[in-house]
Length: 332
Length: 239
Image (cartoon, rainbow over all chains, first blue to last red; front, side, top):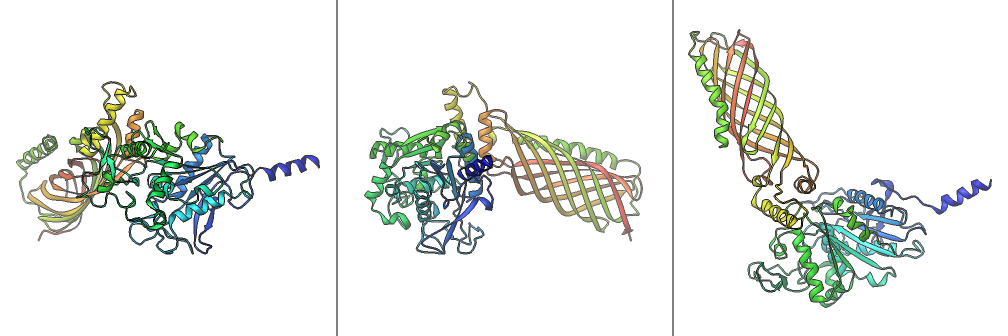
């Protein structure tokens, strides 16, 4: 009788992580009080008390919106880091069906996030609910994770994204309004985005120029180079709720790691060749290195840049690489 | 250079046909069937990318008249090639060469490193169109045709070192790369007829296509060559 009782106690205390990219490992997050909702993959329920979880990793997918695939990649990384038991891994799905380039099948009341212009990558407004932006979805996930009654031992939340997800994270880092209010430290991992939101008109100077950064010299021909989401002008959606000064202050103050692939040098895989993006550098690697240096030099930020050897534009290579594990799964 | 190599095959096929045409069995064919089928060994030779593929080809033809027919043909062949930076467009080749230079300087690649990614290729061709025949000889039919169709290729890279693996993952993130495109060219060949219904066909086409135009800077000339038995059946259409 006694061993059976002890087994029961242990079974209740230890919740096994959900580790398949299948409906069993998903749940809906209600937005704006419902019924609007979006889907997440997660290793543990965000609504059941869990004392063993000490950290959280949110991983935002790329332009393919393949949250299931990113969930698998994150699970592999968590396994390699030995963090599956004490980390809740969350992979949100920014589903989109704008009838043009993005044609995801949507469930009832599922939000359709904008796929172009000020899109889900940059806090754009949903196409089927003008009151919601994609950053509201991230806010909702962070708020759920930060509830002490659910995750009483949570010490840190890491928000990471690769490619288009990296774009999402770099702009969310500077724009979100929940960072200081959660009661749990949040760190951001920006991996291989095609573009960044520069806080002012300076851009990397051409090679051979004395200064590393100069006001963009081709502004006459590339008139949108400083518009949101490439700069802070003409912001819409979530980012329009703050002033430029607030965005710059938040950009510099919050902890960011730019996780860049050493071989992410080819204009493939959705590489942004528009003139506002090309103004930031000719490769994703160059763009990331330049942006990291710029915010540290000009705004006194303490952002870190980590180049992952022999990885290109590949989330699985990036997030499962040894240098990435300690960043994605920090030991509190 | 690729044209010269590609034409070599045609230069073999055409003289043989002419030689046979000069044979003494010169008498107009009195029996021409309505349909024909062919299947046999085939190769595709694309010298510009050093790709030689072995496989098979199959054809079906319908003859409204003795001097022309309409047909469809299909071929499938496989082979290996080596992808080197000189085959890539400058937008890809330059950053790769820049990265190699930096990695050599950082001693992460050996001095003199040259990128080469081997790949296994599977190619299918689908062609349809008319064919003109010359039936002056009782046991030999000569034919020519335009070559118009579609080509599908799947290439699976097999990189041999970590840097090549990284580049291959960039060029083919899913582990393979597939493409469809059109091709055009011309071709011809001859049938040696053993009987009214059975012969042996030898044929070749010289075609142009630009497969994988996102990662290969040039199009390619390809020789499609095939040889094998052909079978004629259906009613006699010679009036």
